[in-house]
Image 1 (cartoon, one colour):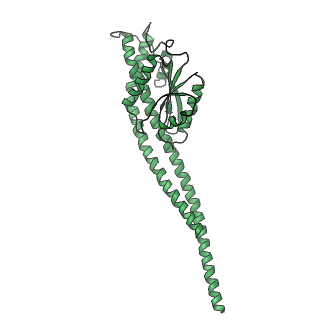
Image 2 (image 1 turned 30 degrees about the horizontal axis):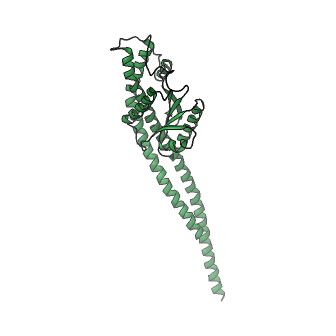
Length: 296
């Protein structure tokens, strides 16, 4: 009887866990749909800004901007890495892949500085030898435009002040719901060739050099567009990482539910066998006792 009770308690615990994993799967599915919808709605606006900036860079013979001058930005080779992680776990290898990519990137740059987004990333890199300049957290909610603006303004101010020479963002790019991979993107300083390659990812034809007339000047228009461009990059990385996190958690919870169901099936067989053995033993004892009374 004690064995039956233990098996039943284990089955009840697994059933409760199964309810939680299925609920988390449904919640992640709803959040994934919302995140992808928001990203699709806002992406055309920032893509248009990126095209305008490339048109200015490719058409201008001489462009002078603090966002393009790398030589005067801080110490040589000093780089900042904006790391986008989650605030919660139970998402499979989502955060572990980001950590691996960031460590590989930091090895390539002397004295890297980290700007963290997410509680999981902070708990991991607080024990690393890298300097943490700032930490942001959105408490597992869908990032908003104001969040991206706050981060972009902070990065731009540190860059213009001369503390940072280069700025990279490491986030999870969602190729599909089943293919998630970390991506590294250079935010500052800006480079026309890299912007052209980024545009090629979304356009079938290569964007040619176009010449426009800008008022009051090319430099003024370019410098006014840069903060919007950087805010767009960061916002896109935040929303895509959010959707990727939900996709990874959805897959992890689906796998956990399958494992729980398999464990329940195995325990149910074990429980039935143990219960049948107990019933057989009780029947045998009754028959033996009845035979003993009959002999007397």
